[in-house]
Structure formats: C-alpha cells, structure tokens
Image (cartoon, rainbow, N blue to C red):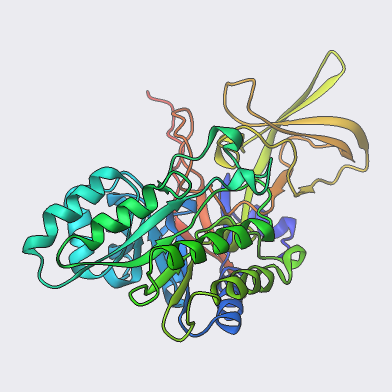
Length: 400
C-alpha cells in the first residue's frame, strides 16, 4: 500500500499503520497453500508473541486461524479475543500449572517443553475427566544438518527434549505408562537464520523418525512444524506454497493427511509486510561533516535487538537536494538509537515524514518501554481511509 503526504499529514505521529486487507490475504494465502499440499486438516496457528495487538488477533480468528501462545497471559489474551480453548496451541517452558491444567482439560494443543510439565501430567492424569492429550516438543541438533543457519549454532538449542540424546523417547515412554494420557502431537519448531526449505525438510524428516521409532502412528493427531517462515508481499510470492510442499512431501511418509492435522505457527511471515511505522523529522544538523536527522521514530520500536542496519523505507520531502549521507536517528537519548544511514537520498528537514515498511512483526506491542515518550498511535488503513484503533497520549502542557 502506498500513502501520500497529504494522507500522512492527517495522522497523529509517531504511529503504526496496518493494512488489514494485506494481513487477511497473508493468512488466507498461507492457509490455502497448506490445505492444497496437505488436506483440510492443515491449520495456521498465529504466533501471538510476534504481535499481540488485539486487532491482529481478531483478524487471525476471523480468517479461521488458531492462536499459538507461550505464556499464561497470552493464553488469557487469546481467550479474551474469542479463541476457544481448542483453538489455542500452548507452547513454551514457562506455562503456569493452573493454566496448563486448564488447557489440557479444555482440549488445547498443549506441547510439553519442560520436565515439570511432564511431572504435572503424571500428577494430573489419575483424577482427569477423560484422556489428557499432550504433544511433545522435539529438540534436534539442526545445526549439524544445516551448519551456520541456526540461531544457536554449536551451542545447541534449549527448547524441547533431545532426540539425539534419547530424551524424546524417554518422555514418550513415561507418558505412555501414565493412565489417561495420550501422546497426540509432536512440536518441531527450531529457529533458523536462513528460514530455508532444507531446514523444514530436516525437521519433517525427524518428525517421521520419531513417529516410526516410537510407534506413534496409531495415536498421533497432529504435527506442529513451528514458525520462522518467510512470506507475504510481492517479494515472497510462492514462499507459502514451497514451505507447504516440502513439509507435506516428507510427513506423508508416516502420516495420513486425512487423519493427522498439520499445524504451522507463522508470525512475521504473515504480519510483517502489512505493517508500517511513520514519524516526522524533528531536526537536522551537521556535526563535523556528518548530517544527523532526528525523528519521532525509534529503533527500539522496530529493532529490539539492535541488529538491523537498513530498512525498506520511503521519504516524504520536498527537497530537490540529494545528500551523500544522512544518519537517521530516533527520539531517545541513547547514541545507539540510530535507525540507519541514508545514502544519496533527498535531504530531510523538520516536518518531513519517514515511513518504514515491513514493520508489523515484533513491533507495536512487543517494544521495550522507554519512559521519555509514550507508545505510538495505531491506525488501520482501508479503502475508506484510516481508522484509529489505539490512541496514543496527548502531550501534557507545562505545569503552571
């Protein structure tokens, strides 16, 4: 979506803008790709932590998605936005016992990720009303198959139960020995740097190994392949289909698509491209040959790990002059709050606008607090203009 300067002039800034139509397209396109490669039993479980903003969750639910959560608070948020317990995937190692028990009894997709959760299942099972269905998160040494592509590298990942170390088999054996318990799912998520098709192929291959080696074929109800995908926007056409095909082709070796559900947990792959971050230029000055442009924006709002060095952006300025280099800075008092360097672009001046594209993931709500300025305003863009969906705060006048 493109915006004119006149449109931006009417907004309170700094702000986020969400293209709701594109968000819906991303959800539905990924869902269509999954169902085409697997079956009607394929489902998107939107990664709430990626952007827990209420309207994003509402759109996900309206598009038929599940909600993937990793904490008690996220579980409660998903319920408050209309997701039923059996539409929630409960992941992560920090589940609270009461919420974990609630999720099991209410039919959520509850994936074990810690020793205490295993113990809780064994303690809860004897008094359970019906069978407790649980999934097991599998930890594999993915870096040994795709060296240099994982977040942890040789340091190994900390989530789930080790396949190579034999813990997965041990956990499944203990669960099988517990009355009123069924191992109904496998959770295969491992974070990668490359997001490559090969990574998901390896994960699917290990899901097949666990199913076959642990004799799960008769009781397994779902395989959750996790998140970390590319997708959305014109630069990623065909990505959803490619992921769906590579996972489906491998999983069919051990799973019947007519009986076993395939889950994926996209976050940025669906919510990144519909998001925009907009702010005005506050000041521009020269310091020993360097042009510093101060804006209402902040790196904290879109780059919480302080790793990015460039953004897809658009400048709104009437200047006919081009500068060889400008340093775009944020509003905070930290020297590290420099968003990027602009090379051979139009000169920015007070009152001009900077728009950052692909700002929907790990932004808006997932932002470290910084006391000196309140959270940005949030708008939804559509055919009828902009609709304010979260107000910021008006600046207070000086005290008398």
